[in-house]
Image (cartoon, rainbow, N blue to C red; front, side, top):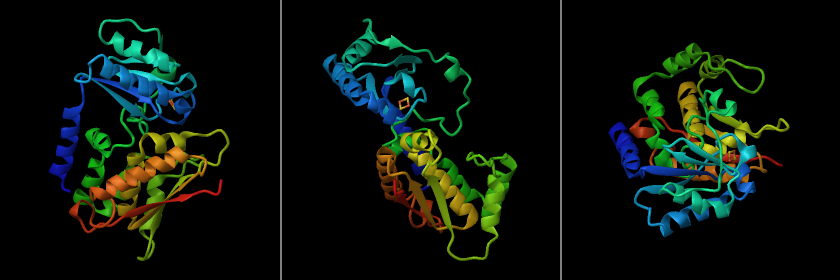
Length: 281
Ligand code: FES
């Protein structure tokens, strides 16, 4: 795959988007409150009301406000519904056709949302994490392409160092320094290890990213691998995160199929394969 093909795939996907996208969170928190039942009824209502030509229901990743789930967002109207029950789903769809809904309205101006600047989770809750096409439509994998074709590994390390990016695990270790250290090791087999085991009690940020935007994690790992000279990567995930594991497996398979992981990525000499290791629980 080359850049024009990548861009074309993204554009084709965006052109297929319906004017209204009803985002229904299908990550673990909302699933526990029956968001899959909500999604099923939203889809049924769209069909029943004959609105399939202008409305699509999309199962998305975590929107962050899990305690008020199941969450449903109407895009592009910036409307949010909280604690949605399956039997309220039809009225939400009806409200897009002039009707009214009994669902509880949320507010994106709530400080929980308005005080955030999303970077890592910029597309979480906006795209279907089980479709690589949606990630590509949102600009995904363009950075990897650019890095492989327009930059040397040393330039990537320098760029990351200049960015000031640091680890978020507590020590705040500078990422550029970490990558530079691995890059200058003698040639030989090197690995990129992504720790998604999240051993700290009560922390769910790794799970949230892996469930909501697995391709973002894979793209970051591939960029790191190119920068340090690694050809193999491992993602270590908690056994208690079955949905994260499932979505990662789907994402790896999809990326391999498009030539974005594996051998000669984007028709370059760069090889990188990724596999999952599951924690002991
Ligand atoms: S799991 Fe649905 S908002 Fe977090």
